[in-house]
Structures are given as C-alpha cells and as structure tokens.
Length: 365
Ligand SMILES: *Cc1c(COP(=O)(O)O)cnc(C)c1O
Image 1: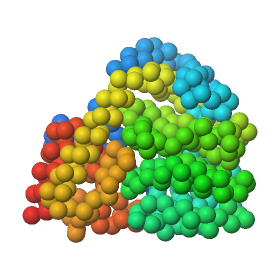
Image 2: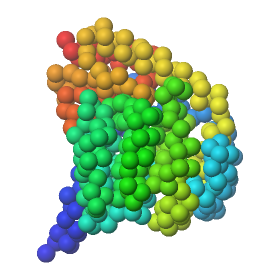
Image 3: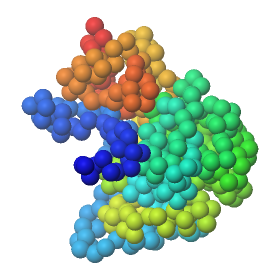
Image 4: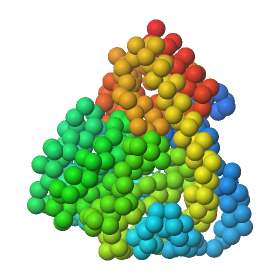
C-alpha cells in the first residue's frame, strides 16, 4: 500500500491552486530575456514597492538573525490607529490567504459547511476542503454573488460564508446596503468572512463601512491585504479584523511567527505611504479606462470591474492565451474558476496596457 493512498480522501481530491505564470518561467520556456516579458496575471501593483516600504525593508535586513515579533505589535498598532479598532481585534497573516485559512481552521471541521459563490476566489474551496469540511458553491448571478441564493444555502451545518467584495476574477461588487442587509439576516452562529483585498481600489462612494459594522456584528470577519495596492505581494502580509473572541480563536491556529520581520516592517511603512497609494489608485483608474476603451474598439465583451483587473471573453481563450505568451504578455486563464471562455488581465503601466492591447489585437486575427 502506498502511503499516499492513506492520506484523507478530501486531501487527495484537492485541485492545486493555479497561480499566474512567473516571468522567469516563461523566459526559460521561450529562451528569451526576462526584460522582454510583461506579467499582467496576478493583480500585482505595476508600480512596484513603495519608496517608504523599500527603505524599511533595507533597514530591517541587519536584524534578520532574530525571530520576528510573533505578535506583530508595531504593524497592529499602525492598523489599530488607521482603522480605529483595538489591537486584540486584529489578526496578522502571511498574506490574507493565511487569515482566510485560519478562519476555516478555527471554525470548520468534517461535517460542517462553508458557503461561497461560483466564480469566487479559489482559496475559499481550497481552505474548506483541506479541513474535510463541505464546500457549498452557489451559482452566480451576472457573474456576481447571488446573496438571496447564498442565504438559502445556509444550513444547520454552515459555519462560514465567504464573500469577496469586489470579487476576483469577475470584478463584481455587492453594494454596501445589500451586504449590510445580508449580514443582518445571517444567523449569529454563521461567520461572514468578507474579503476586501481590493478595497483600496474602490471609488470612495463604493466603499462599505465594513469595519464600522464590526461594532454591531460579532459574526463578521473583514480581511485585507498588502499584496495589491500596497505593492508587497512577494512579502506576504495580510490581516483580518473581527470580534475579539473570533480574533483570539484565529490566533490560536496561527503559526507563532507566521509573518516575517521584513514583511512586518515593510507593511508598517507602506501603510503610511499615502502618496504611493493615491498614485496607484489613480493609475488604476486610468488603466481600467485604457483597457476597457481598447476592448470596446476590438468589440470584445468584458465584465465591468471594481478591482485592478478586467476579465474579458474571447472565442478561444486557451489559443489567445498562448498567442499572448508568445508575444511576451502573461495574462491569466480562468477556466478553473468556471470561466473557460474568459481571460483576466491585470491593469499594468500605461505602456504595458498598450502592449497587451496590441498583442491581443494580433492574437485575434
Ligand atoms: C489577491 C487576493 C487576495 C490576497 O491574497 P494574499 O494572500 O493577501 O496575497 C485575497 N482575496 C482575493 C479575492 C484576492 O484576489
């Protein structure tokens, strides 16, 4: 008997997460230089690391022989001030993926269930399945969350509901009022994990007062990340804000030093770099316009997006993906999200968006 056959069936059945293709991998495969490739595949910030974060990273290097602060005091203090919530309600993660998993580990077990939407972020089913709990996928409505159907999918066994707002890879947004009503209508024994990885890219009028809602809803967990607008995807830092008791449970299943010291220092500095965040936001607005204007010109159907990416529909998505790769442009196929005819492109620098659109036009000939 092979020892691998003895791993739980729910572990053996996990379909691995499919990340965007790394630049170095495509360069190796094509035998070309990395500088000739642009990656618009993982919703990273095309402007790179903020100057303040870079300085904090360099200053931290000499301290790397020491373990990090396992409680992440300084970053939590900075977040606490910024968000107006006490530190004991904040949980730090090795990326927000880590806090999403902590929520699953703290509240799920075999026999219990979590509800999420079709086309929602791939980490939700992964986190649920790794525990042997049951994932309930609710069909999407116009590519977005169907909140009424999700509410109906909640049963006695349900402990978690995941909502990404805006959602990746569709870019759809649940309006604040609908979201607030949804939480108010959930049983208190069901935790809503509200994933706001793209919150900073939202127009002010589209942001919901999710942190404020925490005062009223003890069954709400809000998660955010430093991987997107803050430009620190490679360092892996994210956080959750929740009721103190929920945060305490999540911290119990957390690895003691889950966030490394460089990441802690960089995130603390990035949080203060208001100019970088504002410029990144503005670059994204104009980039979304550039891409959607381009799609319009090429008569390509796309899903209007509230994030830093746009998913668009083509007849032969694998073929177009391959042609774009040959042109040195990496986008993201999203067949694994149940969208085999779509590709997702991340907003890049103006020159990168232009190069993508030109390559796309040629790929469609
Ligand atoms: C990118 C993304 C995250 C962030 O992942 P990190 O682990 O923080 O890098 C979380 N949720 C969604 C929906 C995302 O698209």
